[in-house]
Each structure stands twice: as C-alpha cells, then as structure tokens.
Image (tube, helix red, strand yellow):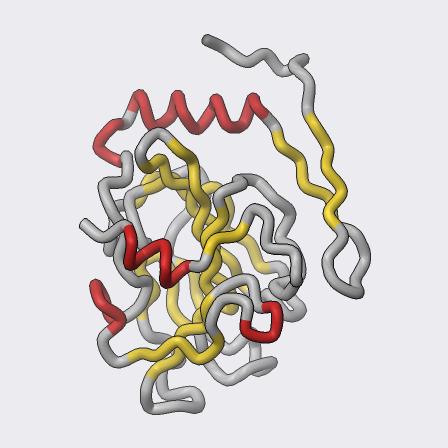
Length: 197
C-alpha cells in the first residue's frame, strides 16, 4: 500500500486548558513513511523501553513532576543531587527509533529531540526537552540506550532536568507541556514500566 502526497490530511483543533488552540495534523502519508522506514530497517523496530536517564533504570534520578501533576503532559527527571547537579548528564533514547526532529524551540522548551518508535505495529513518539546539547541528527536511526543529548536547564530558565513525553499520536505540534486534555499523550513512567525488555 502506498500513500500519495495528494491524499487527504485531517486537521484537528485541540484547545488546551486556558491557552490558545494548537493544531494537530494527522497525516497518513507521514505514518506510512515511518512504517516503510522501519520495514526497510527492521533492526530499529522497538522491542521494549528503558528510562532516558541513569540507564536503564533511572539510577541516580527521580521523577520530580509526574504526568498530569499540575496538568503536566510528561515526566520531569532530576538528578538526586538537586539544583543543577545533573546539568550535562547524558540523555538516552528510551528505545530503538528514528530521529524525526532536532530543534531549538527557544523559550520554555529549549532544545528538543523527537524520536519515532515502531512497537508492536504501532507508532509512538518520545520527546526530550530542555537539552543542553544534542548529539544526534535528524533523519537518522538510534538504538535503545544510545546517547542522544545532554540534560540542560533551558539556558537558565529552569534548574537542570529532562522533560520527557511519550505520545501515541505522532507529528503533533510541540504543544504547551501542560493541559487537562491528554489525548495523544501517555504517562511516560507507566508506559516504560509496562513495556520493558
């Protein structure tokens, strides 16, 4: 089956709590593109997930702001030393995947790495934000546990930490990081715990 560029794209407006609507584009041609990429590179299909810091079990780190605490759409991983003690620590890919974006969004997001994973024939996206440095390039494959970035503090906006999101709707806009609406977002810790290998 092939998707042609002329195929229909569905646009969905999602209104996050007390903020402006953000647009999500569900693009079947992109989903098919990723399916084909993984079919042609099966060694990068996900077999399970690990934590993005203190690999593989987050040793030396704690989840400072869990999914949906204060409407948070991810997990915030901090070093147990507090403050900026984890600044520059390695961030690892939580699973095999394809690096779809490496970008400095500036502002509250800072440097972000996004990775698409094919797991049990479903596509997922992991998002790693507030990075100090990024060591991967867009449009490349990574293995589980491979270093992709270093923990940052968003150029001094926050104490150093990693903001991790896992999405079951790929190619969504960056979003706000906080919302009561969780469609497209998964609890990262629960997902990782339930899908270890």
